[in-house]
Image 1 (spheres, helix red, strand yellow):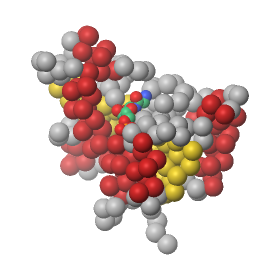
Image 2 (tube, helix red, strand yellow; image 1 turned 45 degrees about the horizontal axis):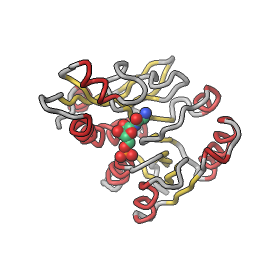
Image 3 (tube, helix red, strand yellow; image 1 turned 120 degrees about the vertical axis):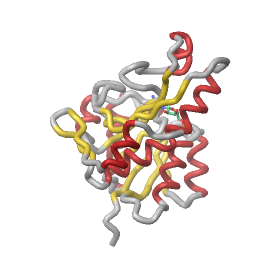
Length: 217
Ligand code: GAR
């Protein structure tokens, strides 16, 4: 029996962050394993990748449910079936109710493509370009009922360069996402990052602290 934490990854699309998590889980000593990939979108490209990696998948199409709560009930039951210790939202494009987030408090992480609390919501790269910011990036945070507002675990910065389009900027930020999401998940899986009284508490050594403040591209 391994003591690794079982992680269910929630996706809605391509699943490149999911792939980064799968790859990280294969490394020796990684404190988590990816045991399931669940999508609300039957057409999500990441489902095929997950199957090819030999990971169990499930589709729960939100359009088949009358209410958000009914969809989340089935999602929660599915997480129980997979005995998920932790949930990683990797491009999962559903807003969650307070009740659902409460049930998974401290156990559900999300990656967001901005340096929160800047640019919550959608179209983060377009908005960053419009504002002319020079520093952009991504954030992994615990999911709470406060949309994109849960306690931050790790952030990674990426520069905005002249001539950037939303696509070139998104690609640069995505490379950082792939670095920080596995690190954040490992910190939580090993118990060294925790949600306590609405804040993230992290026990990190100096090297990790340096990574947390400034993961290199
Ligand atoms: C990622 O950039 C992720 O940060 C973003 O969706 C993309 C998914 O890409 N998430 C959100 O916008 C959540 N509000 P992926 O499917 O290739 O990981």
